[in-house]
Amino acid sequence: MTAMRRLLPFIAIAVVLSASAPLFAQEWMEFTSKEDRFKVKFPGQPKIAEKTYKSEYEVDLPTHVYSAAQGQTRYSLTVVDYNQSQPILTARAKECAQNLERCNGRTAYSGAGYWKNDVRGALIYASWQAMRRDARLTQYRWTTVADRTEAYQLELINKADQSRTITTISMYANRLYIMESTGSADSPQPDVFQSSLMFLDDRGNLVFHEGVYFNGARVDRNETAAGAGGEMPETSASEEWKEFTSTADFFTANFPGQPVVTETPWKSEYGAYLPAHAYTVKKGPAVYSMTVVDYNLGKPILAEAAKRCAPNPERCGELKGGGGEAWKTDVRGAMVYAAFRIMQRDVMVTHYMWNYLGHGPEGHELQLLNNADKSRTFVTLYMHNNRLYIMEATVPGNYPAPGLFTESVSLLEKDGSWGRHEGVYFNGARLDPYEIETGVEHEH
Image 1 (cartoon, rainbow, N blue to C red):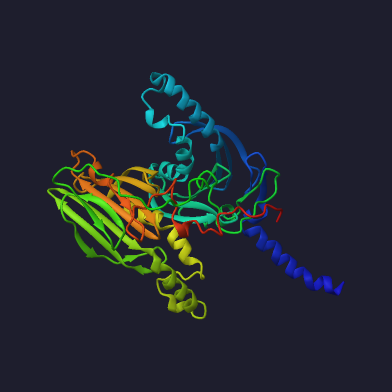
Image 2 (image 1 turned 135 degrees about the horizontal axis):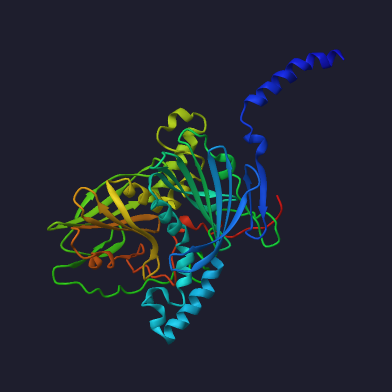
């Protein structure tokens, strides 16, 4: 009895504190959808709505939206089943071949293999749709979610009410997952929600990956093998344009004259200063450039930073040590980081999509309208052998698209041969051979 009396004041204090503190920690529940193959935490039972999602290649895909609210903060998880893209676009290809008029001229969307582009570009397309809202983009980065599944993350400040939206976009088993949390600018980080996503296999078990997981159709094992180097393809350039080859940075491209080469150090997302060269030609009011950043040096720089930061974090400075594997994240996120840096200019982004060169390397394409003079900038980003390639052409607003420049690039192997690949090429450190296996699926 005496012991109970001693506890009563503490119990009373605990009751007062729990009454005055936010109740969200008690209200959160784990929600499971076996149909859409995920587990996630919501602040209460979510509402479920059926919708359709129009993909980049104009396929209406079945979609479920799971949503809940807590106070003024809204949480949602949208799941789009891209497995339907293959049969729809394959059937469309046959239909277009028989009767092009039925396709309304959409020949670019009618090829038998375009469903793969639809799936591979789904992360960027969903990112682009989020960027087109009436909001200011304050963060865009590559990351991982769940059990190390590749993801893109955005932070947006909505112009209407200054609320903040954090969006994380990932893909598993050809399903697109769009997680969104929207709350006031001073609301806490939605970590309970954003960090709780887990994926399930077709038996309902949690999925475990030995390393980073890249969605299956994005990494087609029949299309990742590098082919032997071959002869350079012929290019059709006018007399004013000449093919330029850089043996130092392993690329060839058409320029309207001999480019000026300058050294321009590049600070990576993780704070490593990397060597970079800019190849630039100015022709009248137009400017053409190729910037090449050598990310191969990121590994020793960040590995050393990890050692230095471990015993003394104050000595890290701007370097994000983050352990010996941080360099891989720096490399994997290089194209997304470069895209975000470009978006921070005084520009309006009018186009953003995933694509790839004819000889294999994947790329990100952006089109920008420069606010100062209404000129247009066409940007394509590539990664090849751990080098980042930033191809830019800025032309007056009434000029045609600079296809003679942007479509002329080829990326070379170290021996100078054309880097021909049997299918789509994903940069080496991006696809660690020990990290593309899905691993053993089991219950946690």
